[in-house]
Image 1 (tube, rainbow, N blue to C red):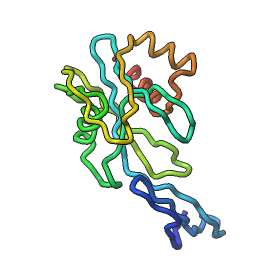
Image 2: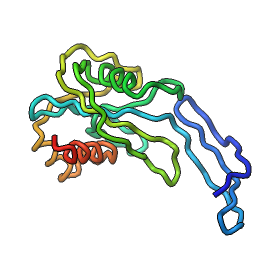
Image 3: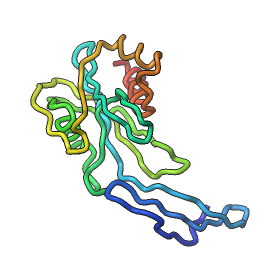
Image 4: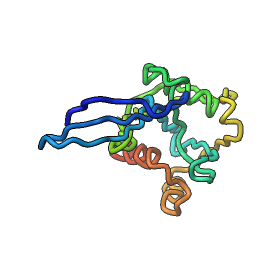
Length: 175
């Protein structure tokens, strides 16, 4: 597929929406709507058999949801994935990791978004005070046994696709 032209339809500090005129491989023309968001880091904080989750209100769903800590750099900036992971972990949970290991790469919604995410395992954790952004003021955090996290997924209490995929990466890595 070839992009013939692009125009920005909307932008804010978190995303850009664009519409591309495209030419398909068979020569026909069309349009493609794309949401450009910066890459994010998702962190799986693991202490023995416990996992640390955050819960926050997700406005588009109108629901509070449990998930692993995750986020992007401010103002759509590019950021080193490992440094971003360390910052998000500290901001959202107050935890600091003595060790961070990359578990894998996730594409959020490749049919409509350019955003990708790196999943990190955080271990050798020390606790401290969270440094949350203003928009995260209602965030809660808690430790859960691994079996309880699995039950929360099965009961539909954890529905964040990236968190469930990260849990899968954790299991695939034998952790």
